[in-house]
Amino acid sequence: MSRPLRVAIGGVHIESSTFSPHLSTAADFEVTRGDALLARYDWLAPARPWAADVEWIPLVHARALPGGAVEPAAYEAWAAELTARLAAAGPVDGMLLDCHGAMSVVGRDDAEGDLVTAVRSVLGPQPYVSAAMDLHGNVSRVLFDACDLLTCYRTAPHVDVWETRERAARNLVEALRRGRRPRKALVHVPILLPGEMTSTRQEPARSLYAGIPAVEARDGVIDAAIWIGYAWADQARCQGAVVVTGTDAAAAADAARELGERFWAARDEFAFVAPTGSMDECLDAALAAVADPARRPFFISDSGDNPGAGGADDVTFALDRLLARPEIRDGSRRAVFASLVDPQAVAQVADQAPGSPVRVTVGGRIDGRDPGPLLLDGVLESAADDPDGGRCVSVRVGGLSVFVTSRRMQYRLLESYTRLGVAVEAVDVVVVKIGYLEPELFDAAGDWLLALTPGGVDQDLPRLPYRKVTRPMFPLDRGFTAELAVVTG
Ligand SMILES: [Zn+2]
Image (cartoon, rainbow, N blue to C red):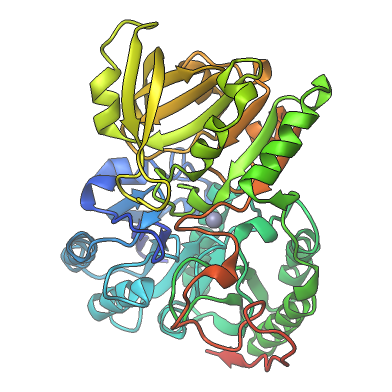
């Protein structure tokens, strides 16, 4: 090759619910450009052999915690900057689109499709585009048609995020070096399930995803990927998908059909990652169980308002049920509620001395569903700065520590608890706004239940007011036969 390949990198990464009243704004995004953008990718410094002799061109990358739909002005600004920088970069051979795939933008039903269309309007048809996505993203026909390579994570919880992005970049570079545009095949699978029923820690997702490497190893196949899709957006694109790319069109199509059929055949086996119940049922079980030290700390996922999936992070339903328990109020049981976002409440109490009595109203300002803002009458237990949550406090009411943050965050790391002075192993019950437990919590838990609480990411999908999702769709509809069509390109 007479000159190095030129590959642009950029994208917008957010998972956002159309059922959450939270609005994601520009302030929610961490934006990287230039060297800071390239520093995200550890295959570049030092460059792996496959990445050497490539000129990597950073455009702009915007990333936010999952939330409600993105305000149009924020999305449009990222899209305009991305395309302007791409145009300014001059001719490129390819582009790595680093995105989630489940971005909802107010007024748009296929934001990634719109973004890649804008990218193509600058790039033209010749350069190759490779998309690196979350398996909870969606693959619309527009996105599929505009990309040459598409792949996604193979684990949930996601422990292969960076190897996925590297695979997407490496496959792009290798395809450019071969000089032949990859062939691709897409199969949509009419299944829409929450991540909490499709963790690769358990069957049937474990075997479904474990089958990918053998498919990918076949002659003529470059990459195979399975998307679970995103259940908390009311959009026609939200459903399961399989994409196989290859050097051989028939091999890609056969593999995509086969993986799609395996996914569809497994539909009745998907079940929640933990036993489920109402919040009160989960508390009854937890308070009975913690008499056995081996079952402490007992975790309960307040799953309907999980900020890690797009919940507002301030629904007070689960907190209200905790406060109703006499053994927690009188301190005979020790519990933690993690957490609520409420910068006003934090500002009101954070500067007081630890141990000071406080009366402060918390939560329910973004998602005000019942019971709305709650009054905490207790003492300030601690205050700390958290890299995710900003200024945070713990307000102690009887045996309960209530964590309140200045920014939306998820208590998925143990160090976030200890920062506020709480060691989870010393607690009976931990109620956390999360779905499936992230690895550190999973390892720390003596036991665990998933509470089907109300919120913007309600796990009980039939309760959600879908209007635009393609029907029939399992499990909203049952007893139908799926026609698994293979789209090729
Ligand atoms: Zn995900």
